[in-house]
Length: 110
Image (cartoon, rainbow, N blue to C red; front, side, top):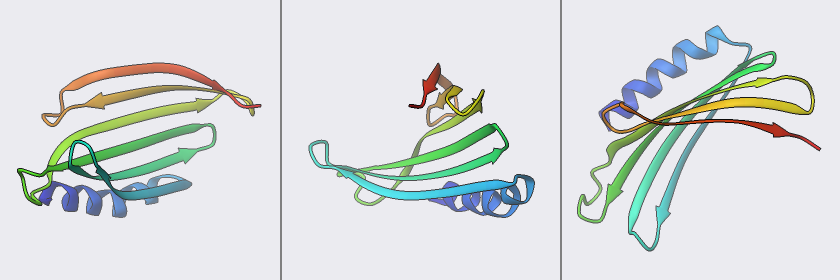
């Protein structure tokens, strides 16, 4: 939980000052079958056609009994080529902040 508080405080005070548009999402969810709880915090930053989202996730299992542990992070980048086409790169990191996956793609709006 300490990592969440530190990360949220740094992001809340520094990133909004650096970009024109920012958005913050904080959520809590419960997976019923696996009996796990998750907390997530996403900070989105955009300037013109460029966008970035920084996400942090914490998990709690029934055995942990309310002890949320940092579980993963993600850094997602996007570029709006025009009003219809957006290309993106999504990077996932595990709890040791080791890179685990990169997804490259594009989206078309109709």
